[in-house]
Length: 549
Image 1 (tube, rainbow, N blue to C red):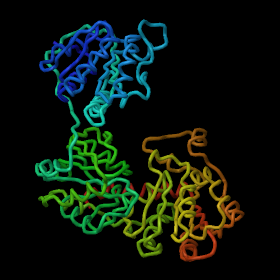
Image 2: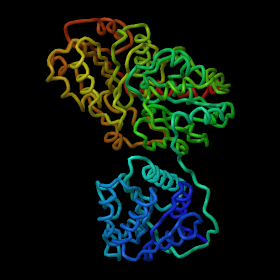
Image 3: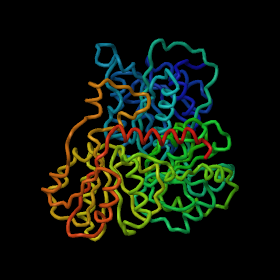
Image 4: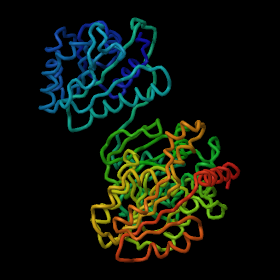
């Protein structure tokens, strides 16, 4: 029988699934669910050692003799600290020592409760990875706990070898051993490039999602081959334009019926970096599709909450390998291409969304030279652009690492300063722009820089959050209303300035704004928040009324 503590069961099941064969068990009370459980698993050789200082080195001896990982299990408090010398030795010898430390609930640390101290990360930079197998109260906790343990065990079993810690908080009571067998749990498995062919041959409904990638370095032949084999979703930030890829993902997934079986993939492959579309992420999370993530650093990125396979690979190498696989009968492509909509047919009021559409259409007509860069600021700007299909052969960049509003303007100015022969265009909202105005005054004349500021006197995207209702006072803090123009400051910094107040003035000035010149250029587009919100609502209403377009 096993303990009924759910995080302990998750850990024991994954230790068994990963094939751990040796464990050194130290006496104690808080670790009883762990030691009793490990001793009940057939296939794990358990050794009893009382002194934790000795137990750590005993485990190192097992590792050196068997050439495989070994766990050492200790109770809470100072018992863990006694492993420090062995952990240091494992670090400098590159030995896969797994430290499993039972812990008290976090709420009791520092509250004069017995055998409590901050245990997570106590070995600091001597370990490859430290994970906390959190206590499980709901499905979100279960996913978090499972993912954390998978990350730790993947690190343990992946070269270069080194020590890993899994800290396991165990609340009271913990003497209930009523579970007859370990549960079936999700194990994330590492793959290599040669594993792709047999894996993908088992699936017929494959969705390939290409996330943020800052180089337009995939050949048209590779993209063409990918389009012939998979349903490929590539947002603007992927820099992988192709006529047979779906790029305006919000426009597709905002109108998808989540329970339509024709649209549910059985395998989702992610390649590259961040995925912008919330509608896409929400759709995939709702279904238990198998998920294979391909990334360069080999770290777990469980964006859909059901990752099963992880492949560490260079972006181009992986894309080439996927393109070279035999073509299959991908049943998803026809269904999804029928959902693509021409958003140019929707009538929108003068607004940030409407002018964004006009700018994208102008870029598609060739306003920017092919080697130019389009910078998209957080937060409304990058999301509004994502509704429209960008076909222009330009590089698209955005600070989507942590998605903050800071630094978008500085990044565009830095790019312009570093590449004086290439045009750099940035679309930015007022709060992001004002936050980063210092970017404008200290770099001299950058004639290749074009800045489009959408100024609607506040952060209207916050007011558009679904289900959010704010009092007038609260809105003043959340949306940061203001009556500020950036044009006087931009002029003082040497920019040629343009003011837009309606659709006609935009049409009259945009061509001159984008034309070559001897000065940097700054365009401020003034809109009203109520009209911006109205345009966004019209777009959402269109998706709701046209779920099968």
